[in-house]
Amino acid sequence: MLLKFTSSDIQNTSIIDCSTGTVIYQVCTPRRCSRSRSRSTTSLRSFASFSSYSQEKLMPEPKVTSLIDKDGKTVADITWDDNHASVIRIGEETLAGPAELFDAAFVKVLPDETLIPTRMEYVWRTTYDDLTLLDDDEEEIGRLHSDCLSEELIPAHVPGTGCDYLELEVRAQDEMTELIVSYLLMHTLRERMYAITKYVYGLQHEKLPTRSPLSRLRRQATMSFANLRDNFRRVVS
Image (tube, rainbow, N blue to C red; front, side):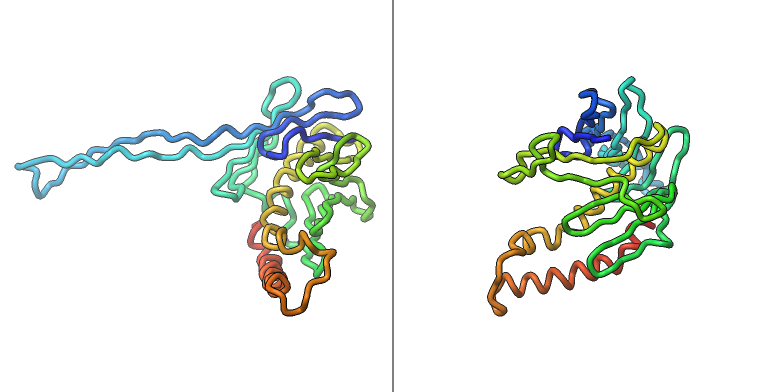
């Protein structure tokens, strides 16, 4: 199965089954709005002379990303606390964040890749360039094709002009929903993991002078990324 994400905004996109051309999921994250909460307080010490009232405070609504199926039913949602998923609901099940969706105890952080097991016994393998899904025999059953122009998976000549395609072996509907949720979380996590080096390694094929400013920045980014990888288990737990 080949899935097309129609928008570069992973939290607001349609997901199309390329074999049928139909939208099988919508990912929707409404803009955060504010709700007002007023509270009056009375000073006991100055009760005889005046009462003090607190000013109206604006309380932001939590950001929620919903996964809606082709029938218009919300089959999963992710509640965010800043950039961290605090609550995940899949069907009737509610999970206390990524730690219950991913098997954080068995995450492997290696020099060139990070392996993140899911509770379904699949493993997301992420590197700077690739994101793949492995089964319990370490066979590849899924791959992200980023920024492609068509279903032939031709890379876009101009960065940012293509769409992302997720290639998956056909799974049962309940598995598919959970895989999509885990992909949404992986996409966000990868952005955080590799944002440090995105600019620096955008010129990775060029040979730079050892003492050049960009070369020094590259070394600093490498060390920062290593620290981020070392703290990864705290991110998913």
